[in-house]
Length: 120
Image (cartoon, rainbow, N blue to C red; front, side):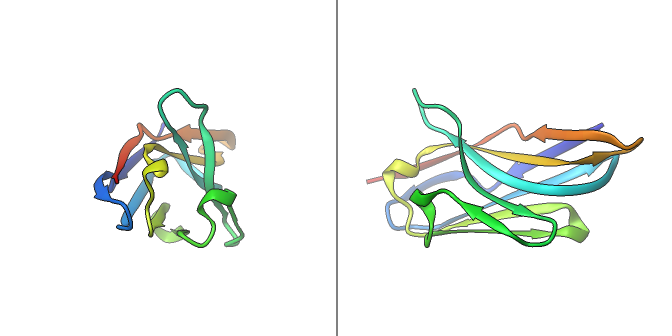
């Protein structure tokens, strides 16, 4: 079984910064992509940023230039550095991992979510 542990959410003023972390553990053979999604009240979950095992990244237009995703493959950990935060960034942020689990089974797992609140 694979588990994700997220940390780093909290309350911050507009213009401030936060860094989210997500560590994967358990029966993992390989991880292909790691990403961050968010869901604001009354809205659908949306992709914020993703990164492949090779380091290719993808960002939502709304966060380009402000957020940076990175990963430590040795630690199976993904980070999201969020700068110049805006009130509209307020949401629950979820970590997502896609790869191959032990036994060569397809793996996709979600974190429990961490709340980011940006005050104006």
